[in-house]
Length: 164
Image 1: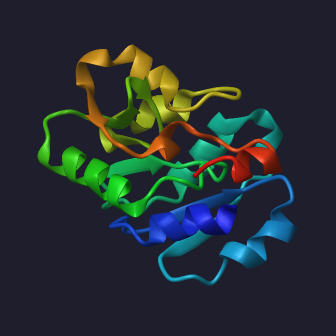
Image 2: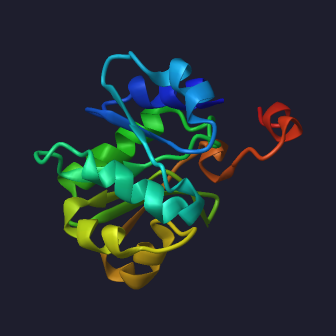
């Protein structure tokens, strides 16, 4: 699943993918390491939740990076063209947060401009960008997409098989 998710990101216009590994890092690393445009970061404190993994990834960012796309490995059905559309909207728009919407439901990945880096670094526990999205509704651009994968996460093998 992580290979599919990573493949979608690498097929997009994302400049660099920082893969943050925690639990089972040694088993997963061979599937992601050594690919062009991929940097692997190990989060030794992954038990502290998603916020800690986001912070590990942020610390590895290139200082020239203007936006942060937070993608989850358990969402392998997000096509590269959707990712490209979101990147373009952040680059050409006036909003600092861009997120896809499928039939009225907000999804992933969320892209935040670097102006939100300090807030991302302040997150605690098992929380991600949703809190920042909630705190800044005036700076959110919702992009309607026809890719159901933006609202599907995979928790079981049956979930993976059930998505067209």
